[in-house]
Length: 66
Figure 1 (cartoon, one colour):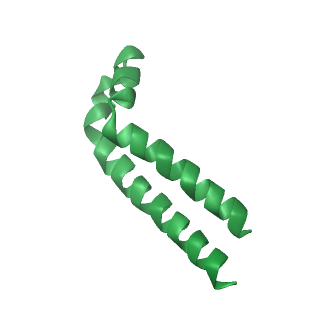
Figure 2 (tube, one colour):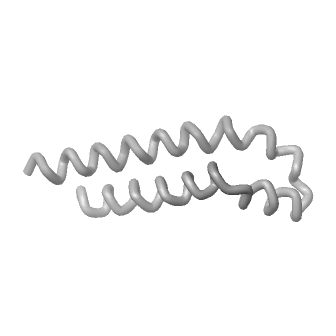
């Protein structure tokens, strides 16, 4: 279980970090006509990044405590 949890945490952290710090979602949402959601991206992406970082840290603690 810790391996899959660690993999999930790392992949989610990388994806959320890329979406937070690059304008990928801004360009994508603007291209498909959903530019009104751009203002709300920080309310979703920053907590999501924090959650995935916590999952990664939890999986690392479980892995090294055994």
